[in-house]
Amino acid sequence: HANLPAAIRALHPVAVLATSGAVGTNYPNTTWAHGVKNVFVEATRGSPTTKRVLIGTSPFFPQSAVTCLTVHTDPQDCSLKYTPGSGYYGSTLSRDKQIASASHAKLVDTTKFFCYSNTCSPIIGNILVYSDIDHVTIAYSSFISKVFTSAVFAALK
Image (cartoon, rainbow, N blue to C red; front, side):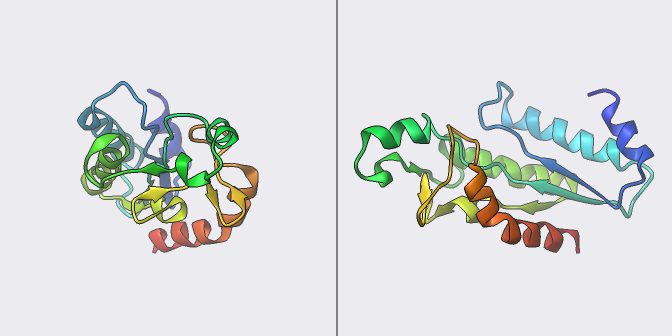
């Protein structure tokens, strides 16, 4: 980690993209936010035109979506419900906004790809979204690839 910022600077990047990180870190949100901000600051030091983009944290389920779906007849029984700004996932979404703001980065909010009305379903349409508690299936990744790419390009403008 100590060598990462200098290695990035040596590439003279047009943009630096970072993911916010797993919900299950053992660090308080403020510590995590400070660390991500420092990476952005150090990776773009001396290059004020380098754009900064933060990819928001995707949902993190309490158990494997596949395991849950095998024991429930209604897939929505396996959904993750959250309240913005509070609880496990809701506070992580607030952390993402804090990181983006403090880092002068544009946030690509990933909840729009996974959730609707503060509910994240393990199945969207007829596609299994998660292969475990937080990894997206290849099928769903392919399904959202164009809109996700468009969101990243929009953040770079």
